[in-house]
Image (cartoon, rainbow, N blue to C red; front, top):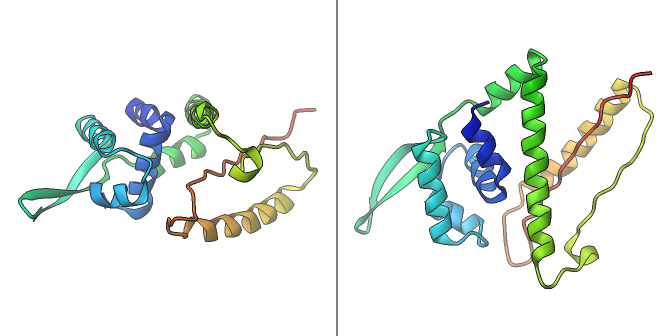
Length: 178
């Protein structure tokens, strides 16, 4: 996975932007601003320019809109291919890099949350837990399928005044060696 991608994914805001563009296949700055009310416009444009200049994003369309050019952005690198390659080849260094980016992003997001003057852990839906389970590989896959179905429903929700952006992060540790 290219280093610039891991740097962007480790940043909670740039990571959100990348995941949104990736999940929608292409996005304009206007669409991103409508989705992410918490990202100031200058910050969004700065990050888009940064990711465009380092080759993470590409412009797939430009159209004239009231005296300005609206650009449509898409991911310029093969994120899925890179992750698939890491998993298929058992690339331990690549997996460690992905995991480090994942944990760094979560840690930064959590740190930003705790910087807020007013936090209400219960009301904000803040939670982390460990649930030790004994399961066969088949039982684990069945449970993950059910979990994924529930999460996919939430991922289809559109933002509104009652819905706040939350990240549900999942880690399943491998079995310990006996």
